[in-house]
Image 1 (cartoon, helix red, strand yellow):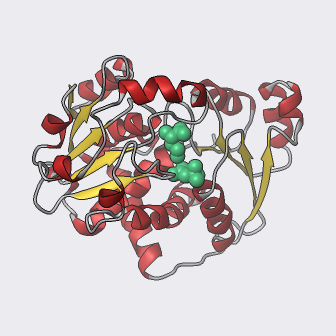
Image 2 (cartoon, helix red, strand yellow; image 1 turned 90 degrees about the horizontal axis):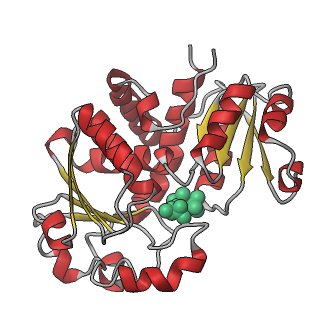
Image 3 (tube, helix red, strand yellow; image 1 turned 60 degrees about the vertical axis):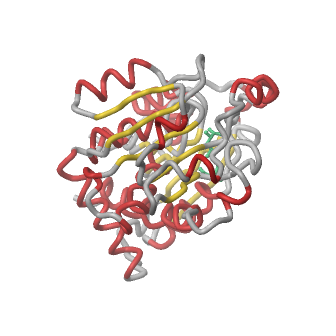
Amino acid sequence: MPKHFLTILDIPRDEAKQVLLRAKEMKDNNVRTNLLAGKTMLLIFEKASTRTRVSFEVGVRQLGGDPVFITSKDSQLGRSEPLKDTARVLSRYADGLIVRTFGQEKLDTLVEYGDIPVVNALTDEYHPCQIMADMLTMYERTPNLDELKVAWVGDGNNMVHSFINGAVTFGYELSIACPEGYDPNQAIVDRAVDLGAKISITRDPAVAVSGAHYVNTDVWASMGQEEEQKKREVAFAGYEVDETLMAKADGNAKFMHCLPVHRGEEVSESVFEGPASIVWDQAENRLHMQKAILEWIYKN
Ligand code: CP
Ligand code: NVA
């Protein structure tokens, strides 16, 4: 049976720490391997991407494999060829699928009908590769992840859903502030709490960030929600991460953002460009972490 990485919970808790350490080792030693020699990884992207696409293409090459990039626009996916047919065809050419798409159920279809590993490169529900990279970014500064308070200010979107799963695996306390109507999916929260995660949800950003070691946010309208931008700007008023809000966090708190950013919306220019911001390390760590995730999948 192929191994898949659809959410952070696919990596058993006792293996997740090893993946983190391996990503750190890959970063520190500029590791190149031949693990994927002779293997072709298909990147199927139905949404735009800079970081995820390029870090996967580069990472696959650094592990000796060949990446092939397709989009729905230039394949039969865009002309409604069923995903279950696409999955069976592509399984005969390639050794893995790295997929950015809309509903998570599309990945489930690829898993069901294909017979090669599937990696989630972002769905409407989750962004597990990003949050695993964010774990590395936090770990580099504060190795005891289970002693941290992580704050999320903004939309209850794919990013926070993966932070919720990360709270199960890595044990940090997660405090979420969202406007009414923009909460994270309750079933995802409930499952994480059942698995032991420490999660709280408030309407007050100041409560969420109080004493936090890391303050996270993301755009108010994700890809596919562009037409809601104006409505969301109204709903999210008061949820900008600015200097006043950061001052309520731990004295050494860091600001995190997966990028791309909307300066002056979810975060002020001064926080984003200021000394607490670690966003470029986050972006770099995508490469190292994704190599470690691919190794977790392909190494016997
Ligand atoms: N953070 C992130 O996933 O960026 P891209 O959309 O550029 O891949
Ligand atoms: N929540 C954002 C993340 C982009 C990397 C989106 O889905 O558009």
